[in-house]
Image (tube, rainbow, N blue to C red; front, top):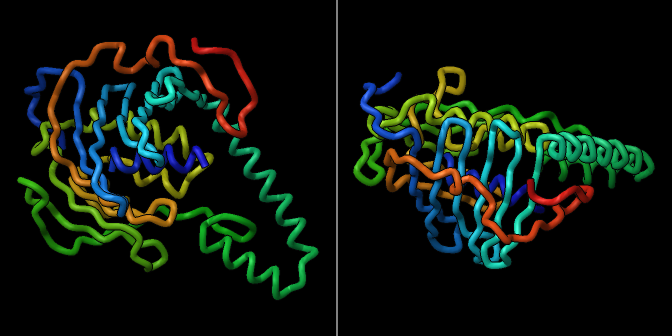
Length: 270
């Protein structure tokens, strides 16, 4: 499913204010991502209201995800196919409505199943966080377990739990160590909000600054999450301040727009 890959990519690349010595408005993050198929490199470029993530797609293709928070639009660019798809906030809300309608239809179908078969299907779907009876997933709560080293950074280790079951791991550093501010990560929170109506269980897994509410502090330099049944390990390799050209956050000229699966056809690139 396209949405699942989008979130997985974003998870791979995104998992106290510093002194005001910032010479550039943007931040470049270079990460190593390993989902069991061998390590790949992901590059994320952040500005206050825009972000771009360059990753490797499920078939080894070069993919780019671009998010514009002001316009509330996300583009997925396939460089091998010279094509792109577009998802607006209206699309996300409409998809969320389709998912809710499908769940309601499924619940009606389950009513006609023999009790034993219905219980088996419902249990399987609840285990995946979907379907009738599946509660809205709570965001993981983190417990500090010690310290570790990730690359050149000494970091604080946390285990993430949902319903007392371990679901993730983090190792974090103070943002000052990376020359980051809380404002540098605002766009990732806006992206989480953008997707929350469709995939709330993944909204909290993006690269973000910790909070007392979640139970951890700092910025993750290593994260371990499960996405689509696969364990994904993401480690930060580099964080530098840079200025980016506007073209960094635009679909390349000449690329053809493709319709997003499940979405009604709309006009061309704006």
